Length: 314
Image 1: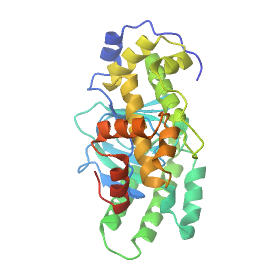
Image 2: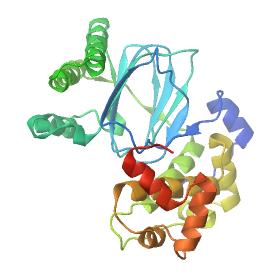
Image 3: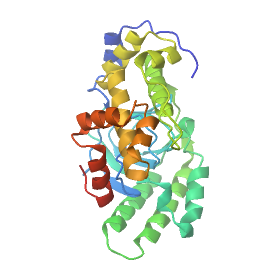
């Protein structure tokens, strides 16, 4: 990230101008999420949030009513009805609602949803031109929006049904939706993000990069607010105040939340022993890690692992 000059606007003024709604909730993607999810906004109201961690899911959402501000990376879109957005798994994103309600649908798709017989659809997603931050939102005509809304409704009906071939049907409706959006092809112009948001994005991006634990010999990188601030060329107090103002949590809070998320992920998805996980997460040893984990979750690492293996959610 390029070095940014410290904004001259006071934090209170920045909040009044750019964030008139409540603080953005910081949401980590559920570890037990299904490989495919489709929902109607009527039953799943949108909330203001920022997603700091790589979700491993492609996300598509279509708006039929309401307005909001979508930020993908450092690209900001003011969205409204008859628009569709495409979010790549590797992008940090945020959403701020600017109307009383929003209507439409969304779906989340994990690459593992596509088995060998649908590998061509996974390749289509990977090559699709609109899963890019600067091209992520498409404006639709009335007929195009109606057609895409219908494809979402069909996917929802199939997902809730018990047809043996429902996955095949969902994949077909998904391809039709992608084709309809590509035919529309009218990209919505982005606007500049507020300068201070660049620091929030920079912090979350560094935080996520620090937790790129790929093997038992990899340990996390940055560990303190001062280290994050140094990377962003700002004073730690300024970074902490900025992050707290817009997320409700301090840099330290975010770091601890991310530690717990990564710990749960490693406990649930690997067979690494607790000593190895402790090392990867930067703890001095098994005891320090177990104490931290139990303090934050009320469960020991071993109990959490057994629960995850049995499918019980703690």
